[in-house]
Every structure is written in structure tokens, then in C-alpha cells.
Image (tube, rainbow, N blue to C red; front, side, top):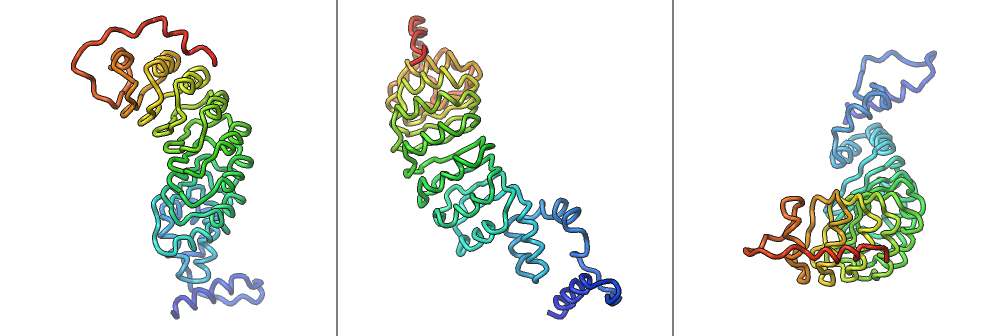
Amino acid sequence: MCSLQAEENHLASMAVAPSTQETSSIVTLFDISWQDVLIPMVTEFLSLKDLFNLRCCSQTAKRFVEATFERRKDINLAGNNSRNIELAFTVLGKCCRRVENLYLARCHWLTDEYLLPILAENTRLRIVNLNECVNITPLALQPIIIECKELRILKLSKCQWLTTGAVDALTLHHSNLVEFDISHCTAIGERCLIIFFRKLNKLNVLSLANTPSVTDQVLIQIANYCRALEHINLVGCAAISDYGIHALTIACQHLQSLMVHRCPNVTERVLAPLRGRIYIDRPQLGYNVPAFPGHINCLYLQV
């Protein structure tokens, strides 16, 4: 305790005018330039847990950590549901100003009350992962949709609160997404998705697993407009068939992986010609099938 008090006295004396400052031989870590040295070269190696532990050491340490939070670009609390974590997140909401990557997947404590303050202060977000955040509402998406013009990756898997209206708003404000995940989102309609994918010509990674509104018509729309697509997850999309998969794989020449497990209407007729060119999550059947009929090519015309 004495050493902490001595440190505080020393730092307080540094703020006094030179004419009244007393000579002191005490030198501490915090005498090193915060903005030029400690924050950019030291704190980047510290986890959020490390920083919160440091914050508890002294008043000076508290000010230093809060200055660090102000410049921090990454917040990763994915899966962290430890006791009082929401209080720590409240501190981040008050201090952080330059966050670009926000990972909050599976944070079951997260509500609009905790999320909205940090979204209001950080409009440079490029990555937002809210997978399995079941206790927030579409209200929390409003600042992300309207203010975060640099958004590139948005993950909303198992967010049953995601509505057609929220996706329509995304359609109006965002056309530069490169990765999008709405797996297990059951409240979104087919027409909403057809309109949405018309703007996403930069999309590389897409997950629509177990989304019942994904049909062949949706896949045809993706084929028309998302030609840069590299990875797509359609696991459990029971409404799609060989027709939609054929349209997709003909148009998306950069496709590297296709996940179609538990898609009963997708057969080896369309998958067999793709094997060896792209990764398919379903094992090959032990017999040969004829090539997919060429006249189906017309299916990927605009709808």
C-alpha cells in the first residue's frame, strides 16, 4: 500500500509547476509515455482480463487502462458469461471510441441496455459477431445498420429476433458486406432474401444453414448477383434442390466450398461433377450418375 501511495504522490508532483516541483528519485512504469510507448507497444499484448486486473491496482492504473480502452480496436468476449461480465462491458461502453471488431457471440447476458451505448460511440465497426445473442432485439441493430458505414462482416446466427424489417433496412444501407451469417433465423421471408442479395456483389462467405425460407429462387438470385462467392453453407435447407445448386455453381466460378448436408433434394446428379473442384461436406455415393442436363442452365437467369 505504501508503494502505491508513493507512486500516486510522485505522479501528482509531476503535474505541479516546475518552480514548486520537488525532486524525487521514484520512477515508475507510468512515467513512460502512454500514447507513444505503453499503449501502442505494450497493451496490445494484454488481454481484456489482464487490463481489468491492472485497472484495479491504483488510480493511475485505472486512468491508464481507460486511456488504453479509448484506443482499442478489438473487443472479444465471445462465449464469456462469467459473473459480473456485464459490469465490465459497461466500462468498455463508456471508454471505447475506436472499436472496429466486436465479437460477442454466445453472450447470453447481453441486452440492448448494455449493447447500445458501445454502438453509439463506435461507428467504425467492420466486424460484428452477435451469433446466439438471444436477449437483444432488432433495436440494437439500428445503429449498426445506419451509422456503421464500414461494416464488412455481420454474423447473426440463431438470432430468432431478427426480422424481415431489419433485413430490409440492411438492404437499404449496406452493399459492401463480404461475410454474412443468418443461420437458424426463421422469421425472414423468401422475398426479403431475394431483394437483399441483389446488392451484395462483394459477398465472399455466406451461411444460410437451417433457414427455412431459402429456396431455389433465393439461390438463383445469389447466383445472379453474388458472383464473387467463395463459401456457402446451406446445411439443413430442405427447400432447395439440384436446380438451385446447379444455377449457383455455374454462375459462382470462385466457389471453394459447398455445405449441403441434410438437404434431401440435392443429389449426386448435381454434386458429382463438382467433386474435385470444390469441397462438398457430403460423402460421395458409391455409384455413377449421369451428368446434369445442360438445358437447366436457363434456371440462373434473373428472377
